[in-house]
Image (cartoon, rainbow, N blue to C red; front, side, top):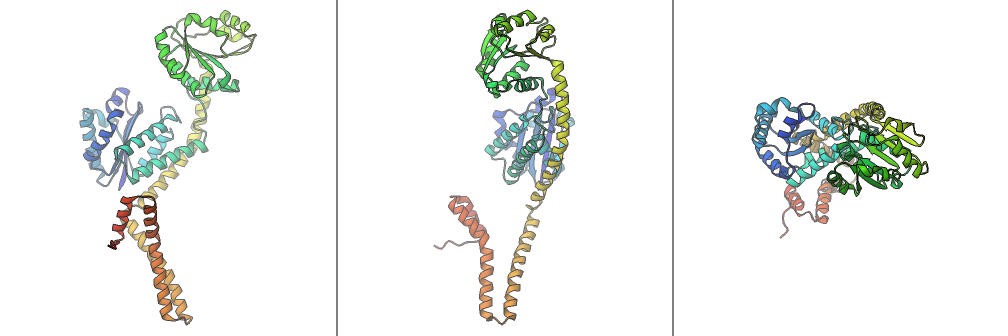
Length: 422
């Protein structure tokens, strides 16, 4: 029995190729069942995101034969020539495959080092394989161990504590300046991807109120609906500026949208209560002179980039610790897997049984040497041997019966050759 991981990601292929090999979530159950039959393996799971598609396999056959079958199936399923697929694929087997899965779950193989979203996507892949019936003991245990490793890495290292995107860095700065975001009011200027990400981070941090200002109201309303925000036009910014504790802007405007005079008027209405401002736009949305105002904390993209660079370095240091954890845990999993092999299991079972027999026999021989009645010694030995070997089956049977696990109960009766008393 061996484990195989095969995939394509942002490092090995451009998006034009990755999108050809991605799996539609609505058809994933069908794909998993087809893959089981086509590749002729024991268990399968599929992870498919915008940056990667990976297939995880538990198989008994020859590795090269599995490779051939898998490429043929991918070619057929996606209607993409093998010549397009093969150059971008990477393959891992056994501990390398386990190690790779754990690294992916920890964000060590991500475009953004240490990003947490991939763990949620792996959990989704696990649930989909579970629901499709393409996962059994080994894959289940592997995913559970992988989730445990990701949690350990998050707990014991600082890989996910530092902001490494301008959106996250901007919100993080706001958290440092304001003790409680629940009581703050935010004005977001723009409705593009960056502002959408900022809005998501603010919403997750339970910010008090969000107002979105945009040139096109329709686009802003679509985003605002998801976070319960109010929508205004760019022309309405001056009358709302005084209510904002935080202003974050990112538009495609070629000229500044927020000038020094506008902010001065807002500060007067606020009785010079400070405003935290972040300009994520290039060219700038907020006039440079705004930063000269005494009650304004203004940060630009360049300010955030220096913070991000420092945070990335912290994540790289944490990644070294994370790799040590992953290597240790992947080795531990492979030890467990090797113990599942039939020959090893039989050998271990016999060794354990013979060891218990020898211990009881040694005690019986001592009793005979001490002059104890031979019949009593033999009777006691027989009873103890029977109890020893009945203990585990009895516990398993009782557990299955108490848990209402009829299939397991029938299986155990068959394994231990228990005749029906009737």
